[in-house]
Length: 437
Image (cartoon, rainbow, N blue to C red; front, top):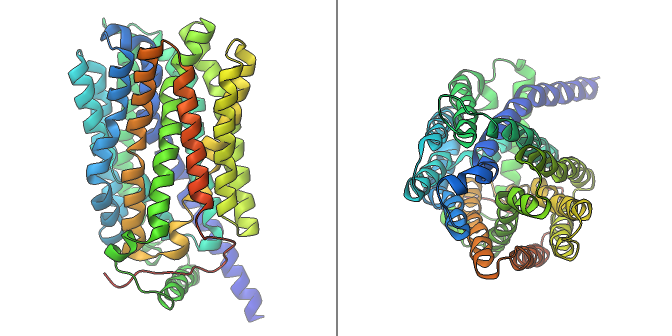
């Protein structure tokens, strides 16, 4: 009888936590990612209006990640040590205001500064969310939770593509459509930033929306997981940052972001050049690969939690990204085949994510996990600067996207090799930990 009661507590607590937390975090990340990548759609008009060359545009979209780099680790530790709720609210309100200001830039320098400030404002959001999920979901449930949360990336592009196409057609108050795109898409961040202060709960023991036995169950489960890690190795945050596996994760994520953001920021322009379609049709076609990415992220996250395997579930999708990009160059004269190849690439762009971000919390906990997730995301995201910039530079020099796409394919191939070089196999129990900070 007692085991039946305990099982009931288990089911009730997990269901309540999923229903309360995941849809809201998903919505926040849709808003965040849309404000990050909408510049790719705005480029269909903005580059001409601001007289941006391809490498100037690549530099401008990529400089976003320098702001990220500077503030990522401190922001992530604040989530662990202070308050996820308050820090996320601050991030969303500030990035929403800066995103809206993007609609009023007039020179390349203003474009650079706006993107740099946007990155600084958003720093800590994504890794903070990864840490926050570890406050509520056990290791064996984490990849599925991460998959649901990270599905916001392809969803934001699926929603954002046609929305951006419609907004590009506006011409209100003498402002061009690309300006309204930034202004209108920045407003939800401010609104939900304020709502976050009242909706999110920092820790399970503070959750009034859970029953007492549910609060005790999830708190004890997470504490048991933490103690299991502490029994093996005891790392301080600084020691954890120097672990070989953490360094490999940083390098792999750097290479992946070179490839992913090189594709994301340039894909609308690539399809526009290949097809000659109108801006609205281009944005609709651009949404198709992201639909495939959405299915991939959910299925791969489910499969990884079902089997307990992380490394191959991370590496194989990345190989699909490399293959899809390489093949897209060979079929550039056919729009249907090009979109198909970019759809294969989208499997890797998103399918690897839930398993990859389950790796750090499989062997680290607390401040060490927060610091390492911040490090991986901050340095890794500098690849988001390098990839778009290199593509822009190669386009300027070769007057073709082919060389740039092959560079992005090679980058993904290197990332897959780095993941497979890690000595992480099927795990049900975490193996490393962090010391008391």
